[in-house]
Length: 217
Ligand SMILES: Nc1ncnc2c1ncn2[C@@H]1O[C@H](COP(=O)(O)OP(=O)(O)O)[C@@H](O)[C@H]1O
Ligand SMILES: Cc1cn([C@H]2C[C@H](O)[C@@H](COP(=O)(O)O)O2)c(=O)[nH]c1=O
Image (cartoon, rainbow, N blue to C red; front, side, top):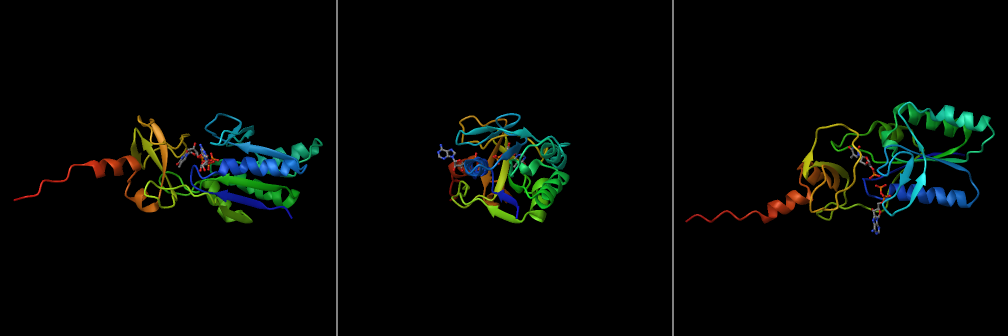
């Protein structure tokens, strides 16, 4: 039986790497797959991992219809055994419904990868629908860590080094590996407590370096 799988984790937890590995393992056994992504950091129609691997993909625009695409491909004589869907948090609810229909009606496995929540810690539309519909939901085993050493569960957005909680939901960017000069827009993974307190690595460092108040008397 085909299944709808959802693999999730914070930014930088290895989702795109797993997407590429999943594709590799299925292709190595002679299965035929299709690769999809949207808004990848490496540019349009590209699935990229921070480990350096990239793969050509179909770019999923907001009006892309998975059901029509698959039916048209099969009618034209193509074979599709599985689909790899990266950055699935950005897909619309309708697109996730189409993927579920592809699994149920056409017996094609779908492997979707994406982050659960945005920089304000609200569920992304695509991820929320995946949580509702997936046959299997898997949390990535490689844990991204907060600066304090705890498991990171939240994605923070920074603008010029300062954490923000307002702005557009979709802003492509990367985790700022403590660059000397912070990027205009960057992301940092944090534990819930530090996300709540807006305490990024840079702010925690600044606070710890602040001079002690002089003792009175
Ligand atoms: N230089 C490196 N050496 C070893 N592992 C690395 C290196 N750079 C990144 N990684 C691994 O790659 C992971 C990020 O992979 P990626 O697939 O791009 O994540 P995601 O798609 O979840 O954002 C990191 O969690 C880390 O384990
Ligand atoms: C939290 C958050 C992230 N994004 C963007 C930033 C990246 O381009 C992708 C996530 O990619 P990854 O492979 O999981 O690192 O999503 C965004 O647009 N809005 C957000 O709130």
